[in-house]
Picture (tube, rainbow, N blue to C red):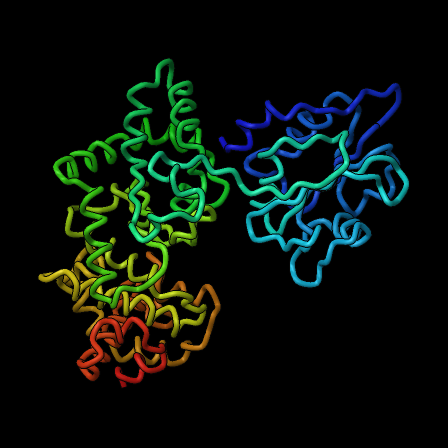
Length: 451
């Protein structure tokens, strides 16, 4: 369930019925749907009072109609790209229309006369699927000429309500307790399993982007909540018990403040930490971009993945360092150093943190011994691929369940171990620079310390 699907009933179609048809063509791009709304559903909502037909962009010219609605990105819909050019949009560097350049996640809805002389023309577009979906989250009157630039409508958590405008407060971190919201919604939900899942999904739908970061793109919120209320209940109950006596709101803010202070008081908005119940086999923590309203870096913390408070604290420090690193880069060397620096700093900031805990190893002694046993092969494999940005190669060093190319006998996520060794070697050689210096050191400098 998406926010757009909740708002669509408010978007009243203005298409008038005709005696013959089709009156409208709905011209699709490469996507099958947007924000979990199939194109058939979009056509029913916007064009349901008239006769309409769904066609592909390649076939649009062979289907005469009075009016046309084109949906998609310029890259994914050739007919839409051609029409944008005719309407005066600059497509040389993204999409610029009406004197404004669209950002990722923004949508552009244009209602005008068809320059091909076939009646009314409507375009729903953006740089990406999220931008296209943004057009569905605002009322668009198909009978009135004009254009709308829409931003994906996020239902903000109550603590964020005061931060919609650039006001004081961004220097403090924010904790959004989606785990607590889930508990409240689940306790209040009534009816059968499907009804309860729907009620919980509706209460959390504004955080679809957060759950996509945890579960993958196009997450089905209702199905996800149904699974959480059924098969996921034991893991959620266990996580609830583990952290029942911990003031997570206070502790996460303390960790963020301590981290930024020790690293030199880095400027800029502080992160927003989303605490939720995620799948116990999924990622434990992740930094996933900037909030489009406040500019804060966003951090995901999955309570079902942490065995105790110590693991949560180390992961929070690790992701906070990522929030302060800036642009990381895509090559294996850049990614390994970024993870190694975050691991080394989180270990140093929390006294008593072992390598096994800092690396989040499930079998610390066994895995650390295996890394040491295969250290030479891992370094050789890294040296061969250090400049690669191939996702398969990078993932082999950094992802759960993957193995470094040519070193299948070593544990997964070997890149974290290599990065930690390099970062600690750099600290040993640059004691005077300390942790702030390590944060800003170039990847080549950090890797040189390992030689």
